[in-house]
Length: 309
Image 1 (cartoon, rainbow, N blue to C red):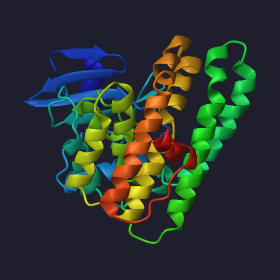
Image 2 (image 1 turned 180 degrees about the vertical axis):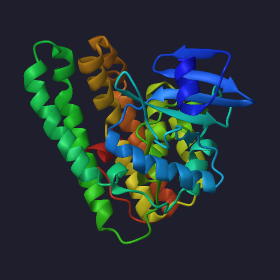
Image 3 (image 1 turned 180 degrees about the horizontal axis):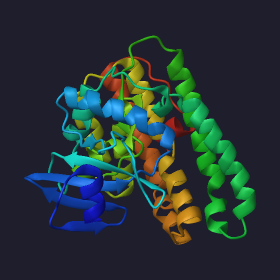
C-alpha cells in the first residue's frame, strides 16, 4: 500500500494502519485516510462538490484529495478508493452541538439531486413495498423477525401519513448536509467523513441520533429538549422532526443487518422489548412540541390514547 500511496499521491508515510476498509497514515504533520468508496460511483462528483463548499465555509470536514491523474477515485484491483486529509480528532465521540454545527452551517448549500434524500414519502413507500415482498421470501428462515414486521410496517405508514400532512403546511424548511445514518456512539471521524453525506432536511440527523440514543438506553428526551432550546426550528420543521421519529428506521436497519450481514436474529429482541416504551416516548415528545409551539400539532390517534391508559 505504501507504493500505491506514493505512486498516486506522492505521499511517503513510514507506517500505515489498516482497519477494515480503511488505511490510516500520517505524513509531514498531516493525517490521512485512504478508504474504499462504498457508494454508487455516480455519487462521487456530487460529494466532491459538496466537500469543496463545506471547506470554503470552514467546516472541518475531511478534505477529499485528487490523485496525480487529477481523479477523485483511485482503483486498486478494480476497487474504488478515495484519499482524504483529516483535520479533527477522529477518535472523539460525536455530540449534539457537533451535529448541529454541520447541519446549520451547510443550509442551502448547492447540492446535486443525486444525493438528495428529502422525498421521504417516496423513499419510505418504496421501502415498505420491498420489505413486504421480502417477508414472504424469508419468513421460514427468520420467523421471529417476520412476526413483528406488520407492526413496524404500520408504524412506517403512520410516518408517511404524518409527513404528508407536514408537507401541506406552508413555511420555511431548511435543507442541509446530513448523514446517510448517524449513530449515538459514532466518532468525529464518521461525522466529518464526506463519504457519509446526503442532502436532506436538517432535522434528519438529530431525529436519527435521538432514535439511536433511545434504543441504546440513553436519555433521548433530554437530547430533544437540548435540540429545540438551542436551535430555532420552524413549525413545519418540528412536524418533519416528529414524523422522522415515527419512522422505524432502527427496525429496518437491523432487519437488513440480520438478513444481509448474518447478524443473529435474536438481536431484534433489543428493539421489540422497547416498543411500548418508545410509544410512550413518542407521546412525551408530542406533548413537549405541542407546548413549545403553543399551537395545534397533528397527532397519531393510537399513540395519543396512551395518555388515557
